[in-house]
Length: 139
Length: 381
Image (tube, rainbow over the protein chains, first blue to last red):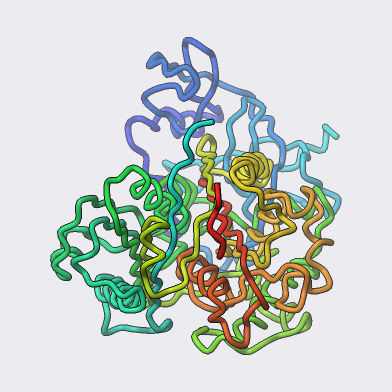
């Protein structure tokens, strides 16, 4: 796995619990202790109520597809073998948006608003990325 | 009734050559453009007592190079949304009496400096884009590709409709000797262009080239004494949508644009039907579609059908980006479109002139929406 050539996340102390959570197959979101709204990435203050009190709360990871686009240009050498590859914009049910990649089958009938479920991709021994697959169990 | 604020006018504009200008840095390009604007305005550097800069790296250095000692100084980042913001700020500074003659100056040597808009140096989207690099997500182009894909899925918009935007602007550029890209193409030519980030093709992306732009504004009373036909700022507004702006907005910015449009048209007796031309910020061709919808020239979702049949062409109902815009004239991040508005109203656009143009609406859709109506007629009230 040492030859992994794609960009890796810059994991600073503030975001570390999220990445550690992914290693353990958990999606932990920074969540305001006062107004209970989730946010991502972690920030000092809650953007909604400006409280400084925050805790990491696990969420199930159900999500909806907001949009997708297909990269035909590789901006990093590590993606050259993947083009054309897809980037998806998703919204977790917890209310935060993410960019990610899809895994698994992707039929033309996949529509915006399609239900997605998380897929934990261990790209290196220490880094897991949060990707998504179509949740066939849900319409 | 409150006393209306004094009206401001553009009294000088300047543009450099466009293309690869590797012997000029951003300061040189800004000074070149400002020199031209001063010359045609019949003014000297000593007349400049307000200085507003964009993309020029350092305000002090720029002013020192030209020996400018203004009463008001402001510098802004080189994001396209700041073209409208800077011009609006110049008007406010004049109306507040902080300065009498304001120069707004833009210098961009990004082509020669090797600027890249995707990959490791990409900071689009609240500067936080690096978080998504592991997934291969990068570049403002991809952001707009996601928006257009969503527009297609929601409204049934087709790429064959979108194509009318770059085709019309390239046609305009073919009539503009200053434009960088002047070879016209038809629908087949558009569809043959390679994808960069599907559904967007190379021809949906703005150019990257060097150049500089400057405008000089003063209040209407003083403008009457200067050599150029004044072009008045008739109405203007700005709305931001920064919340969640790291991601494409669900509504294509329609809500914020509608609010900016409402505020703009509330200031003037002019209506959309009075506009002789539009200048629409065109970093990527879908932005034009979203803007026509958001600023009320058609209904949300109807943009695709609206632009079919060449409505945006010089010979159409609504000539738009008559210079060729960012897609074909020059990547001057909104600045050159404002100059084009002025030149249209002055009647200086030669082959691409809109006959009798008196009113032009500049609009930009981004996390900051800006809206400016230029008019050849001074308000009477």
